[in-house]
Each structure stands twice: as structure tokens, then as C-alpha cells.
Image (tube, rainbow, N blue to C red; front, top):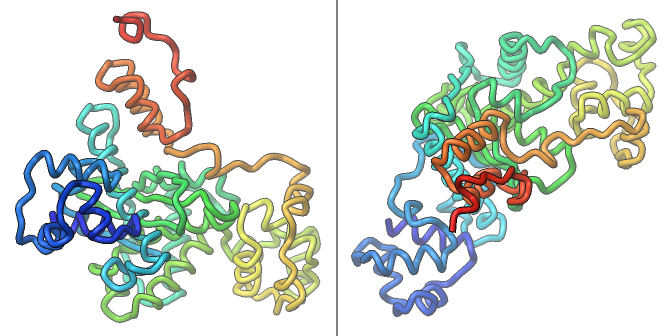
Length: 363
């Protein structure tokens, strides 16, 4: 419990003295709580919960055994701004898992089997093979992915889009795979983050896979980045002549224009840097340095798609199955109206729900 209190405190950037003042305890008492040498009564636990802005069960439940972080580790760099952002994402992830578990207990949500790649992952080539395997399992072909939330759900991972800073985090807790992805940043980055966190599930966590045994954290993350890029934009899309009207031989010879590459990035909704890397990996290139330095503007991306809106991972915050589960639980009166809105994480507001004359209008 002490470790959980410390993690929540550091996530908010609070000192032990500041937390002590907020809950009516001396700084030395907070230090003893965090070291595990002082017990906490129910009233103090409630005060800590309020001061640290986390539910009480955050302090009582253990952290999921399988947890990935895209930025820094909790114990090493938590005093830095990046460390605090990473820790906030971890706390949000654990809260998300509790919400999913509650919906499962209500009987309105069924955990999805996690699709785990059956072969060993040791390098980037293996990661590409894993991404192609997943596309084949989900019958995606080599076309663009319409909804990352929907794809992750089909692969066994429920993704929450959050307004917190940072990138993302993912975990497997028993039969539930979950991830949080930050809304911050451009759409291509958000989709890459979601694909990356899915890679942690499909490839296997750093503590259990052969990749984790033989590689550093940076090397593991780089391999999973390759998986994410291949999942979002397969290099076979280039090699099959899907990205240009001219014959494949002409594309391979280097006649791909910036406008064509921009069209690919827009259709597949990938970042400019990821699109360039995939083009080069497909043997189209090298891409001129000037292209890499001049990232397309939002207007260029929209123009490439005929100004069709592409809102993936923006307005929608929870996966379809979770949204349906929340609505079922509310209609079955297992949760209140306010709790239903809370579980939707801003995707709907209170007045978006229909009036239940039998429940909402009771005095």
C-alpha cells in the first residue's frame, strides 16, 4: 500500500510535506506510510484517496504483472516530468482495468482472447512477420485500418483514449488485455501508439518473451515499433504497386513522387516519418532528405483525401464493446446514470442518455 501511495503522490508532483498537509498528517508519518512501517486506518485512506485523486481500491490492489511503458520506468525517473506523465498513464491504465473488470462482473462485457504470435521474436524481421500474421488472422489484407480501437478489441486488447500527456501503456491482467493511449499529438502518432501497445500483447511482454531476455529495453521498444509500422502500413502495399498508378518496376526504380507518398500517408492515416520509413523498407528510395524535412501540413493531408474527415482515436474514447456494455449495465440498472457517463470517459454527456422515467425521475 505504501508503494501505491508514493506512486500516486509522485504522479501529481507532490512532496511528502504537501501530502501530509492535505490529509492532516506529519511529513514523517507520510514517509512511514510509504515505507510500509505505519498502518493506515479507513479514514486516512479516504483522505489519501481524495488528496491523490485516485479511488481507494487503487491502494489495495496489486499492479498487473504484465505492464509496458513507452517512456520511462516508475522507479528510475519518477521525479522527472516525463516520469510523472508515465506514472499517470500507469495509474489510468490500472483504473481502466478495474472498470473493465466491473463490466465483466456485471455480465455485460466478455473478455476477448488475446491473439499472441506463436513464434519467437528476436529482431525486426520477426516483428514484421508478426504484424503480417495478425493482419492475416483478422483478414485485413494490405489495406488501411479503419479503426484502431476496433482492431485492438478484435485482437483482445481494450483501448482507452485519454487526455493525459505521454504516449501510452498496456497491460494484461488475467484474462483482460488493456491499454491507454494519449489523445495528445497528431492522429498518426496516436494510431502508432495504439499499434505499439497492441504489439506488447501480440509479441509478448518483456518479462516472458525471448525478445525480452536477449535485448535491452530500447531494443525491445524499437522492435515493437517495427511491428506497429508494419501493422499500420505493410511494406507489401508498396511492393504490390498499391501506392502508385505507375507499374511496380517504375515505383521501385524511384519514380514515387512526394504527392503519391502523401496520399499513402493520408489513406493509411500514418505519420509522415512512419510512411517514409516503410517506403524505404519496401525498397523504394532512398527517399529524398528534403521530403523528410518538410512534413505535410494538415491541409495537405485533408486535400489528399478529398477533405473527407478521418477522426480515428479522437472523438471516440472507448471501444465499441465497452460502450455497449456500459449502456447495457445502465439499462439493467446495475450502474447509475452518472456512473455510465463516467465509464464512457467523455464520449457522451449526461444529457446524451435517454430519460429513464422509472429510475431517473424518482425523488
